[in-house]
Image 1 (cartoon, helix red, strand yellow):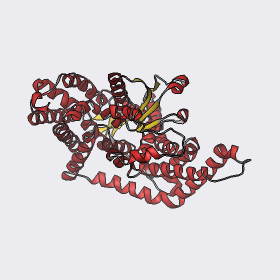
Image 2 (spheres, rainbow, N blue to C red; image 1 turned 45 degrees about the vertical axis):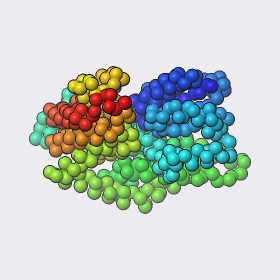
Image 3 (cartoon, rainbow, N blue to C red; image 1 turned 135 degrees about the vertical axis):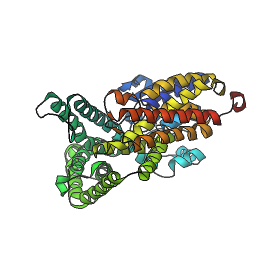
Image 4 (cartoon, rainbow, N blue to C red; image 1 turned 180 degrees about the vertical axis):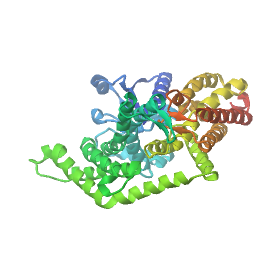
Length: 474
């Protein structure tokens, strides 16, 4: 049997390649030919050719963001998440052997209905939550580079060109670093438009791009609806979904044949952009902006115990599924709050992110008899991944012993996030781990490192206390 696969996660870093590796190794073990195309942060690698697609017995798309499926029309196609590919690769491949996969593009779906009746698939398809999450993450994946570039350039310009004054660091007007700061600000200007545009593209394909981006720009600029703050990332998300589904509805309308050629390039973008613009300016903009203003004011007013509670919540979310949906919700909130002038949120999240891999890496070094050979090797990789802020490095440990590992890494991340939040650590880049301090994106660096160290120690000691020797786990 010849199987092809495509893997892609929102960040395009860890899960993309972990899923590819799991599928490849499993296929080799059970005697199936398999080639994986990865669509990561650096683009498409190991691209599938037309000839390979023609000869394939089936296609697996393991992705949490939009992947173009048009080239797979007429082939047996199985869509799933990267997490499923990491944890159940053999089950996915075996489904082609027993005929539990439909041909993409066919109208009848008897097998699909049969698959949906299984317990795992019932959970996955009981509502549209996964689909909505996929659309959201598609927008987030395109937005992140703009926020990273913007945040880094602003941080570097302040670090190297800022002059201390009574009001903090100020960059002299007309200086070189002022220009770098201006370039960084452009990244934040585009941030919401990119988020909205690519949520809409995920829902309605390319015709959704123009109304999504135009609506996103309106959402980010409160001057359109008499608001100083604008509707921020919440407005951008709402615009993206509205634009996508409005475009999808217009695309479904029956029109004369002579108009069809100009529908995607003229009629659909024009009509949907006007609808979105008018709707947001006159109906939605001001209430959503008010919600953002209230959220920002609430965060500004947080002191003492309320900050600690927020730190505990964010730390727990970051480490609960190590790059999964819960982690992404916290991450998106932190990234959005950078643009809203609340980098302390991202500061807490940045401190929590590296704790799972660093904590498990340290734990495996401290008490080797409690880990199998593969985990000891994974521990070395986890240490490297933790330094660059990739929390997925702890997944191999959690997959084997979730009841002990997940509470331990959550406890450590909660400690790290709470210390960082209480001490006013800030992060101007939507990323975590010690690496962000090297780019001068973090303020209160000593407390940032102290919070990470404290979290790592808590995780390592707790998990080794809870875990039993290897023999008793096998």
